Length: 410
Ligand code: HEM
Image (cartoon, rainbow, N blue to C red; front, side, top):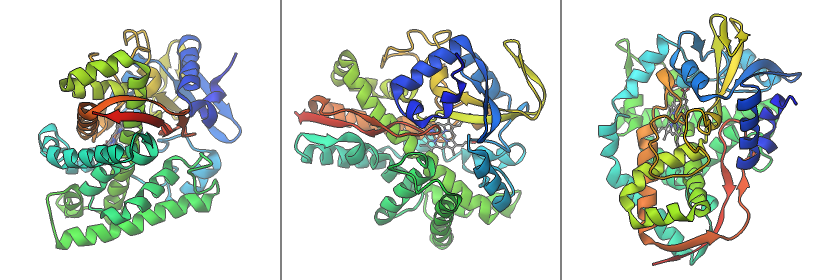
């Protein structure tokens, strides 16, 4: 049975169980599947770990421009007309070398493990605030809507110079951008709505740049506002796009991991107890939560030469999509992939991608998730599900929309 078309069905992709059943099927039966649907320009679907790793590390053979994320053809055409590229914006993730290397270099040092570790006290304070909030709610909350959505948002907005009063607006814009297919989150399917979301982002970050030029601090916003590329100030469009990719990539992913991580701990109570007894496992647990949740579902690449995978030829100029949650459950590489194990050696996982575009914010993401669970687990006595979890209907960045829980603090 050809199930390739299911890959764009947000109802299938927007649920952990149906999504993984589809990936299991594709990995075993159709690891290089051809996607052909009247509303989309065709592309190939790659689901095996070894193929995804190979593609991700060969950045000259598999380029990011012009197609980075799956979008309906009509939407790509509208972006092409408006922006001159099917991606719309040109952010880091849409660029190829040499420009990509130069622009990534602007923030490379800021995102290294050492400087990120210095953010620990700030992140701990925010984690404490959200665990306090959970405690104050008196034993019942929707963990996604009350906690997981806001905690990483506060962290990323703080480093991007967004004041707390504007965070709600930023959250809405990000959900509109990523959850545009979800009836509860999208602004609407029409073209003007998508464009409006981008313009709103633009207007806001332009103000932040102006402010950080006049009043520099040690945050990421200051690095971006004052960056030089080839000895010249960074182009305004590149600058604002950098804010947008960091703001969007930096919180939805981490919040889906935080909620997906708690759900996994509820599903595997012996892992919950292990973490409760040994908070030093928080960093290792965070890495396993990231593998388990794999919130970035796919990225696209376009081939610059003909390439063969498992007897199928993908021709020069054709696009393919690589599926990270599938790679992370590929039993050919990951031992017992459907077991959540907070002590697993996760060096092989691909949730952050691999190669030249590998997630710039990975150390921050691990730090945030680890700090949150260290705080929560040291204070929590017990916790259980208080209703059915719900999933965001999305094929790009996905995870939980609702996770009702009942709990008691020590
Ligand atoms: C659990 C959380 C996260 C996950 C799973 C994740 C995943 C990813 C993935 C799969 C990519 C594409 C990699 C590739 O094409 O090879 C990526 C790129 C990126 N991520 Fe993350 N990410 C997370 C958190 C963050 C955070 C916290 C930030 C920023 C503060 C961030 C910033 C970026 C940026 C800027 C890129 C583009 C890098 C480039 O193209 O050079 N991400 N991320």
